[in-house]
Amino acid sequence: MRINSIYLLRSIVSLCLLLALALVLPAQSITTTTAQTSDETARCLTCHAPRQIKLVETWETSSHAKNGVGCYECHKADPKDTAAKNGHFSFSVQLPVSPRTCAECHPAQYESFAQSRHAEAFETIRNVPLRTQSPALFEQSCAICHGNDLRMQRGKALDNTWPNHGIGRINTDGSRGNCAACHGHHDDSMARARSPETCGKCHHGDVGPAYEAWKASRHGNDWHITAAAVDLNKSDFKPVNEDLKRPDCFVCHLAPSTGIASATHNPGERLSWHLATIHSEHREDWGDKRLAMQQSCRNCHASTQIDMFYRRFDASVLEFNRLASEAASLAGDSKKRTKIKAAAMKGKIGAAMLSPLHVRDAAETLIDETQSEK
Ligand code: HEC
Ligand code: HEC
Ligand code: HEC
Ligand code: HEC
Ligand code: HEC
Ligand code: HEC
Ligand code: HEC
Ligand code: HEC
Image 1: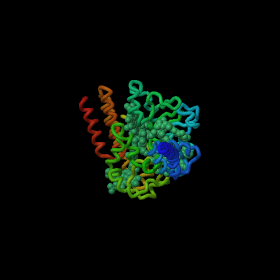
Image 2: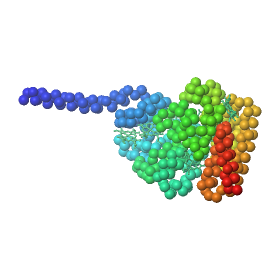
Image 3: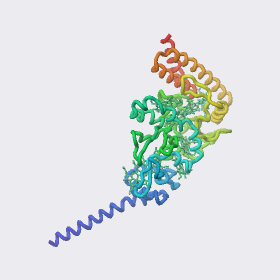
Image 4: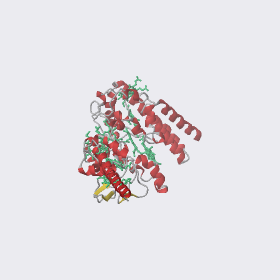
């Protein structure tokens, strides 16, 4: 009898210990966070730190965590928004983070990004047939790069529109675009934003082989060798002051340079042509935009190299316009036109980003198309 009650007492004690341990463990994982947090974020962490372990670890090493920007600051919601989960342990939270939330602290980047074609990338394809014919396949393909029209009800996604991190997403607050298309969800590492692979995840293949063309050029071919010696994580990276001897995408398209070109989140500010089409036209104010791009080239090259590059690039664009227009006028069906458009883009993007083989392949394809129809 006695032995039995001791046994019972022991089991009760160890049960209590286990319970106390279970309560203390998640609390310990909060106290081990080095991040300064708001009271709201500290409460998010009590539940989320032991659940989304790697997600929270990623955030903990970010400059956001070091500056007191936590779960609540990015995921708080307006209770009236269709993305809001209301009554989430007395908070209103939302899963998608709109660029307007980032804009509360980064207004300049938001303003610049909002002017760009990146922010329009869903609008330009809103009416493609695939979206009405096979919406699920649209969400699984075009929308992953271009973005979609995100629709939610009480924080739950409708019509397979989530997850989506495309660059031109229409958010439930009506804003356009998505900063997380290039910046990580919880990792705000600048080295990642500045890497060519970040742009290359969308800019590759027959939608416009900018990544492959750059990689095959004298700029991209051994970029990683000089890049390895540079701190790409640094804030305030001015390429002209750094030891980076060959450029990748952000150096030419976004970064500040010598002279007039300040940093931008709108790559269109430096482009003189519309290249993603069969027949390219100049952009509005194209002379000024070209001058802005040439400021980046001047970090490394003398005027003759730059002027001669543009003279030959212009001649190549006009020549591809001629070849592609002729092939398109003879093309019997839309499948042929798609092939011709892809070849025209490949050739012109190849010429812009200095890949000799892209130019050769495109020229051969267009000449073959014309001859086979004649
Ligand atoms: C008492 C525990 C608790 C607290 C406090 C809490 N959450 Fe949650 N939260 C959860 C649980 C559990 C889920 C469901 C997780 C799952 O499905 O894996 C969840 C889900 C979420 C989701 C949706 C995830 C999804 O995939 O649908 C978001 C966003 C979220 N929480 C953010 C927050 C934020 C921000 C805070 C602080 C303001 C917070 N939570 C506070 C427990 C909590
Ligand atoms: C700097 C802003 C920022 C902070 C801070 C932040 N998030 Fe996020 N979070 C995002 C973005 C952006 C996404 C991607 C959503 C999108 O595309 O709109 C995301 C996605 C998520 C998701 C869904 C993705 C998945 O893999 O399940 C969860 C859950 C989440 N966050 C939880 C948290 C928690 C918990 C914290 C605090 C440790 C946190 N977030 C802190 C910006 C942030
Ligand atoms: C509540 C304010 C706040 C919000 C919301 C916020 N940030 Fe930040 N962000 C900061 C602070 C503070 C820093 C660190 C200081 C700095 O470097 O400017 C920072 C740093 C960054 C950096 C790194 C800058 C560098 O030079 O290392 C990036 C990139 C960034 N934020 C992007 C975003 C994105 C994208 C979002 C939305 C998903 C976002 N931020 C939301 C305040 C915020
Ligand atoms: C891998 C990412 C990716 C996918 C998937 C994708 N695109 Fe694109 N698309 C791009 C990129 C990048 C550009 C910009 C090309 C350029 O300017 O060099 C582009 C450009 C376009 C353009 C030309 C935009 C303009 O300025 O007129 C159209 C139209 C287009 N895509 C339609 C579609 C459709 C429709 C789908 C799905 C069937 C699709 N794309 C799938 C990445 C993608
Ligand atoms: C097309 C990819 C891309 C998108 C989309 C994007 N960024 Fe950036 N962002 C970058 C790159 C690349 C850099 C580094 C630029 C540099 O070094 O000059 C950067 C730099 C930053 C910085 C560091 C300060 C600076 O300007 O150098 C902040 C903050 C930032 N972005 C916020 C945002 C916000 C907020 C959004 C959404 C409104 C956004 N970004 C969308 C690529 C992007
Ligand atoms: C040496 C500078 C340089 C580098 C590095 C570079 N680009 Fe370019 N890019 C250009 C120039 C120059 C043009 C054509 C500009 C014009 O139209 O005047 C261009 C055009 C483009 C276009 C075509 C836009 C349109 O009209 O449709 C895209 C897309 C593009 N670049 C993306 C990238 C990506 C992605 C990378 C990295 C993988 C990259 N670029 C690297 C200089 C560069
Ligand atoms: C998530 C996919 C995605 C990522 C990541 C991305 N882009 Fe784009 N980009 C697009 C799409 C889609 C378009 C075509 C938008 C349209 O015309 O509708 C585009 C267009 C462009 C253009 C032509 C802009 C114009 O005004 O016509 C340039 C240049 C460009 N991107 C450069 C970059 C660079 C540089 C990076 C990396 C810092 C990058 N992009 C990252 C999807 C992406
Ligand atoms: C960060 C420095 C840097 C920037 C910025 C830069 N380049 Fe270059 N460029 C180089 C280097 C280095 C080489 C290769 C020299 C070698 O191979 O020794 C090169 C090579 C070239 C070549 C020769 C390509 C070949 O195949 O022979 C041309 C043309 C060129 N660059 C044009 C440009 C233009 C136009 C711009 C601006 C849109 C630009 N570069 C921006 C560093 C740069």
